Length: 244
Image (cartoon, rainbow, N blue to C red; front, side, top):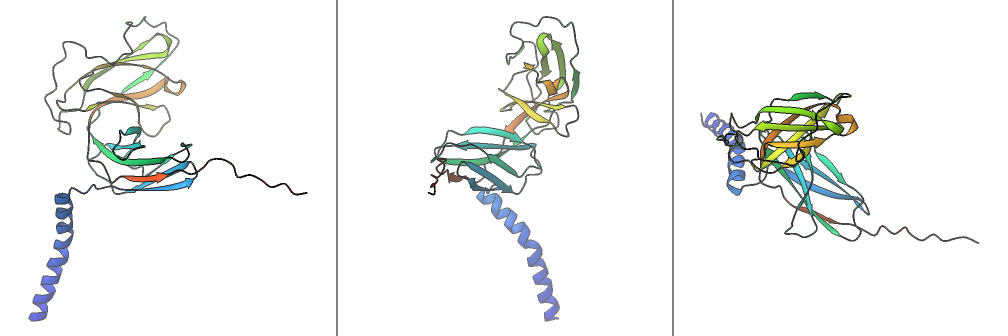
C-alpha cells in the first residue's frame, strides 16, 4: 500500500512539474523564444532561435550598436523561420540583437493583376500613408475576434501603382502591415509598415508584384527575447607572402 501511495505521489509530481515550470516562467516573464548569435565570418552574423509563441503572427528581428539601443528593424519574419543572417557588417563593431513576436489578424486578401491599362491618374498624394476621414474608429483590441481590418480595396493607378484603402477595426494597434504574395510564391511577406490609424496607402509595384495577392494587418508587438551580441572582426585581407 505504501508503494502504491508513493508511486501515485511521484506520478502527480511529474505531471505537476511542467505546469509549475510554466507558471514560474510566467511569473518571471521569461520570453518563450531563446536567441543565439554566431559570427560565421569576420563580417557576417547568423542568428538562431528556439521556441515559438503559437499565437504570434510572426517575429521581428532587430539590431542596435549600443546595448540600450535604439534598435532598428531588420525584417518581419514568418513564424516558422528560426534563423537569419545579417551580412556584410561594419568591421570591429559590436552588434546587439533581439527578437520580438507580433500579433494581429490579417484582412481578407485581394488579388490584383496589372495590365496595359489605361488606368486613371491617381490623386497626387495617393502613395502617402493617410488617415481618410469618415472611417469609423476601431473598437476591438488587437487579438480580438473583430480586430482584423475589413473592406480592403485595391485600385490600380498609372505607372504600376496600387492604391489601397481599408476600414480600421482595432483600437490599440501599434501599426499596420501591408503584406503581399506574388503569384507562385508560397507565403506572404511584409512590404510596408504603417503607423496606427492609417487606412490608405499606395504601393509602387516591383516586376514580380504585377500579379499578386495583398492583405493588411493591424498588429501589436510582444515582449522581446533575450539580447545577444557579437563583435565583428577585421575584413582586411591577410597579406600574402611572395616566394622567390
